[in-house]
Image (tube, rainbow, N blue to C red; front, side, top):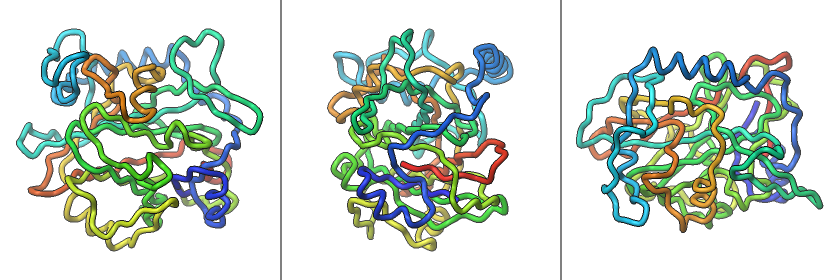
Length: 333
């Protein structure tokens, strides 16, 4: 059994680790053999995506960002822009109520001498370790030992909330826990806007990644996590954040889902699997002062939502655990 909890210090971790959770610690796991796809397999899948799906250029998402050195809406979206393919969902017509959310899931690997891009620096006691984040598509399974991070982007202004629930094979979900925002991450600032990148965990967190580990409870019924992501025009009522993750009322989250969940399409960046973290993404996620521009990398996954009238954006993001020989795990942070 797992719980995704956004904790920003080992002291906080110790205070709540009595219950199963995805927790934030500095421990590292041994990556399961065969987890990293070979280059040949990646190229085969990318070719299949290009041949079997219609290429889509997310013009609205890109054009909402500022152009490099200029104001918004000046860069042309067309030839040469990366393309996306639809992975699931019902087609959404372009309407006035259309909203989008960008999410990039990153899996960390140890840095090698040949790596030239951005690196994530992890300070562990007296040792400094460097990792290279690599992109994961929305349907990629997670494995014991994986180190993961998430980055969110919204083309429209609002307030971001991320709720985690355990997911089980019988379809049931665990209790909802608000893992973002907390006052320990970005001082509680959860405002989003075009080009503004929000990372979970933040780069300054110690440690600054989640690690998938063996669960002490060995609950074989668990199959993954369900993240409910909300972008609201104004702060949600009744939510008072603090330094720790906040357990919410199940009925409250279910009510939000019933009122706000809407038709959603999911698109993945064609050829994005395995692409590494860029310096532009590193700088934009560091402190919020540097925006992503129209020339910078797009998110790996884009959710297009036909909003209900007057409703916030709400999408459910499933984190699926891949096959394993041992019972399901817990992620420590």
